Length: 154
Image 1: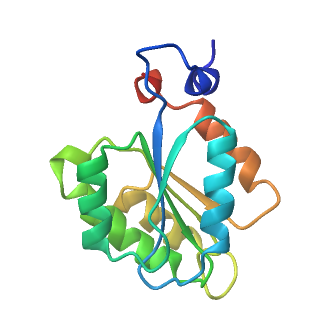
Image 2 (image 1 turned 135 degrees about the vertical axis):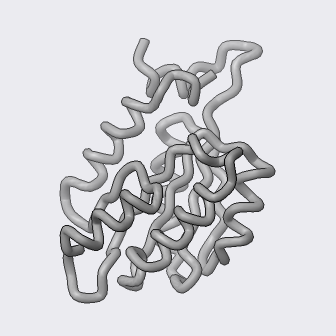
């Protein structure tokens, strides 16, 4: 059974994987967060949607309290590469969150696609994957979900 299928498993005594979905600190958009919540719920995950304009401190606190199996950051305003890198560094500064898979996606740069340096900065800051706004992003994100370690689905 694949990890993604296991996320849907309702076997008694087995919890479903939890995903925290959050906007970045400077982004007030919510439609993207609702879309992600619906997608992840449909795939069998329990989802905690923190909403828009989430300060880094609140994001860290929520992840420490909830202990999610995955954090998904989303941005539409184009400042995602700045806010996302800062948020990822804040998460990685906490040893309890060092192994938390973190992905970011959406419109991450104000000038269109990210430069290689901006993408590398997000990865170096602690993002495990970066998904820019494209037709292939959801397919790539679903592939990432199916490849998550099985510990995330126990």
